[in-house]
Image: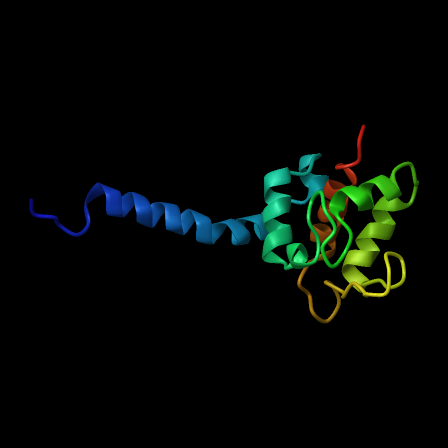
Length: 131
């Protein structure tokens, strides 16, 4: 049997690779929650991954920093939770969850825009039971 390079399988693999590589860029370009009225969980998870958040945080278990579920549970029913979490993402924070500080993802580094930090905070807080 003679195998040729290319063909439909190669084209499909190339299209899949392009989609996977474009996912972080698409997450960054996603419309802010204020414009759409809701936060897309898939886009937020992709944004958290591409921004480096998942190096220290996980959805359900503690890594270097607290899990998103623990952040959501601790912040539940606090009227300023969204603003507080958004500011922690943008400007960093220390002492709230232990001795290891969270670095700033806004400001001079500009890893995240204010709108992206807002959407991430909204998504994280939405992970609280009953949210």
